[in-house]
Length: 319
Image: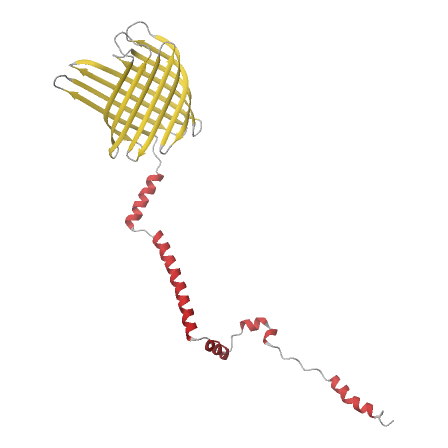
């Protein structure tokens, strides 16, 4: 019995301890991440961290940072040298860009003149000239050409020929075009004294450059011609085929080949012109050409095929 009355006395301290409020825990640095991030490190911690690095490690890090900075500077200097030009280079580049961007005018053309004179055992004089004019806009192109040849042998006229051609093209697209062509020729010593033709047709640009250019066309129309041996003027319908090729060999030289065929009941006419052009200075050039012309109908005192070789001094503009 005496032991049981001691139990309340032993329980009183326990109950008192249970009623006392537990102490508030002191917040640790990790409990507030934002404060831990924003609060600067203690001076002692910084000193300890710096002391933990050896002088060799500090020197290595400094060298690495310096190398990275030097590499960045080199890249900037390379970019600057690639983009920065001297005044002379800038002017040259501006002129080149202006030349490229400058749109050519609608007019262009060329003129050539040749002269040959021989004396001594035989006397001969030959003149030849040609003129070409081209007017070209977005949809239309007009090509006009005039050729003349005159020659004397021992004071007697031996060759005289004039030719005028004009062709108007309508560009359907960048490759296809429709055309109307007019051709007139007068040859006082050829098998056909006069020839006039009017044709219409369709053409296509097979090669468009910049090195090789080739245009082909086909059409039909009418022709009027007067034979050299007299008789009346002849009229017939013809078919017309042509090809025009240009090879730009270099910046100062080019080769061209032109071919034209007109065939009808009365006559078949074929013409081929080969020309080599060599620039001398600026727009002045030397032209060496060979022309072959053939008529299926001949007169009693003329040959079927005529050839002509010429060396001319030419000038071109608008190109």
